[in-house]
Image 1 (cartoon, one colour):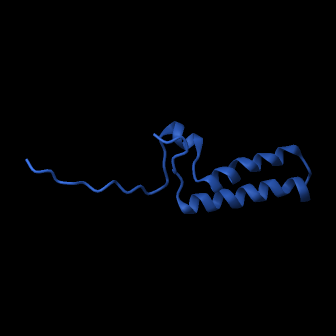
Image 2: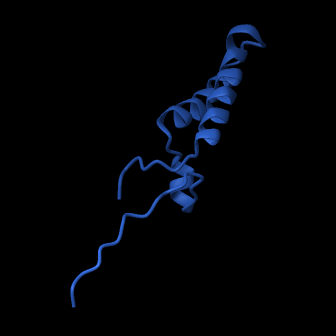
Image 3: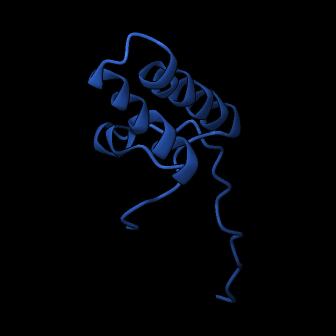
Length: 74
């Protein structure tokens, strides 16, 4: 089992990156609250492609292709 297994679909990743940038931008152009740094969480998980909560709960929005099966002679 990988530590940072890919478990996010491309659309999920894009939404996270955009959402993270929007929330993070609130620190610079909005009310300038430190809470805006919570935008780093979806931004980083979107860039990495792995969500720790998805891993914890066994969720994956990423389409995983199973490895090819090989027939053995019996």
